[in-house]
Image (cartoon, rainbow, N blue to C red; front, side, top):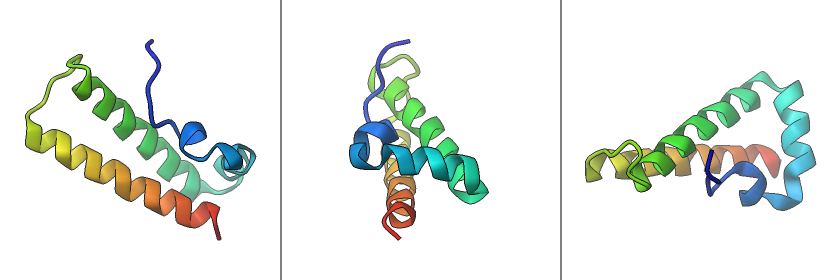
Length: 78
């Protein structure tokens, strides 16, 4: 599979260990990370026309990805 930008390890390179720790110890964080990963893949597939969607749907996916990233960052920085 091609490299997908915006992976959590790339977005928060200084927090990779904490991300791993929280994925294994915090069910809520693990669920958020899984949702982020899924939405991020969908955005990437839309952007690369592997699974094209209309512009409004792509914008909504990006907004959802941003909201998940904000929530993940809030937890990481707590």
